[in-house]
Length: 550
Image 1 (cartoon, rainbow, N blue to C red):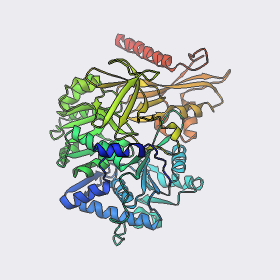
Image 2 (tube, rainbow, N blue to C red):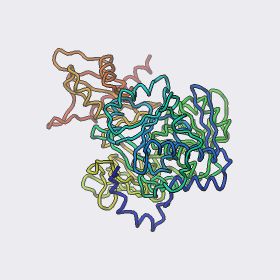
Image 3 (tube, rainbow, N blue to C red):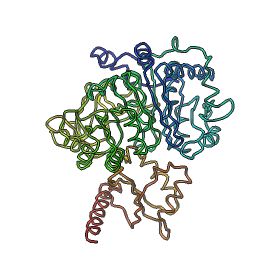
Image 4 (cartoon, helix red, strand yellow):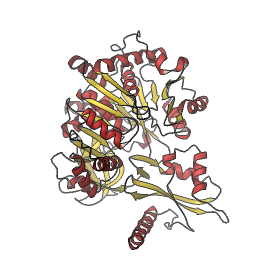
């Protein structure tokens, strides 16, 4: 495929000259590990449902990747082809990416929660040649879903099923121990596209973010240096590797550092505590609900996690009380961070910062990253003043696949994040809101426009607006405000049933519904969502006072 990563060439010379682009790929990192520590355990993967644990040394990791690369090549996969995978945090995910990297193929990770509606768009837009999926995961039959999808996806030539049967089984088709060695001669360069990952935006359709090895690895180098991570660390990754969080810091970073990673496919805090204790985990990264659950479990069970040095938390602001509770329960430093699929982590607090910074800020820029806050005319805002957040980073993406008009990057390389933020006198930022219409629920972006568009198709609905409301555990949840047509009724059960019938991912369905006679709007008729958010806050405060009196 011809990837239109038009944002990469203009900044190549400067990025290389300044030492910001490593000029390496994950293949080079794995080669280094093979030469330096071939018998070190690279990966430990726990499947929570079955209890099965897989351990792979770097030598075994490389061998499996080579076999899978040969299997993919037999399916016709080569440089520039897209291989999609809808996998949990299994060892197959890591080895599949390493295999694709040997061939110059592009991995397209897809969240396991996605269903027909989202997948049909992403797979078609990506022109995916091969998809790798589990037969079943968490009781859902992925093979049956893909059987129904394939006829509408002419580019999708093969669906490879982990745990499947017959010629399309991962185990028989790709794990050929006698396969050709694909470790040399087929490798991409550091500027070739290596990852295509979809993110929700304001257009109502997902956008395909294009990354090269240079953009991804540039971020990881700075990230690891900021957090003092190295070969001696053991990383726990329970956040999905189909998210940029899990992909960059749970899949790529351990290999780049020659460290060890522990993968957990289903979040169960008791299992996580056990893994931290058994495997000597020193670092983990996830969203706020994971931190809440982990701290509570350690407190309730009394099972200390003395090896854990740091927990980096991103995806939603961290309440001050949680930082204090987690610090006391875990004994680990709580790091606050903010980032995007388009560039990975942008800001983090520092290991030597006061704990208060983790709850009051989203950190300061990583090396190789610049941030600006501007007003509507593009003029820089004074410290402490909220405005649009712009980022210029060594890790900025190459562009959106076949959507260059949405790249939101000016001639000087500044990317408009769509977020509102302020910068304090010390250079630390705080995200104050989002100008783009996305809700972040437990670290997962909810595509608001797409859901609203679907709801407008319901015959009972005249107007709809979906906004966020705060949630202690998940950070945000979604509430749908609806105005019904004359004489029509609409309730929560009707909304859930309708969206499920549209094959909407369950986690995207709003968790509250408010039906009222009108929605606040401007004289031009634009719905004022900030007033709806204010209404929810007022309702929540009133409910809290009522609860306090009872």
